[in-house]
Image (cartoon, rainbow, N blue to C red; front, side, top):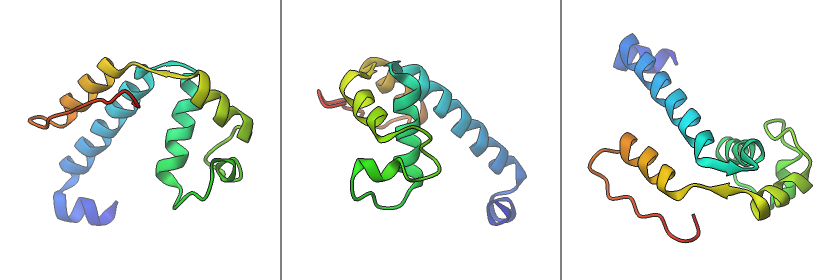
Length: 103
């Protein structure tokens, strides 16, 4: 944080935090079923180093659920692809965003 403030200035660090908060809120809104479990899974995948397998995430402190919830979230959870496309397009102006059927 100190490096970001010294290089970019306090305003940029504040703007980055705001952008991240807006993205996290928007991403949670894109998750239409099993939203909390999918959101925690996303956090754990992004914050943890390389993941050998999904059950190992349940051993990490960032993922507060049992490993069974990971599979339930992946099977029963839903992501609104149009909302996700809009969220990413708003954060990445000018980028072509293609949501595949796997998203």
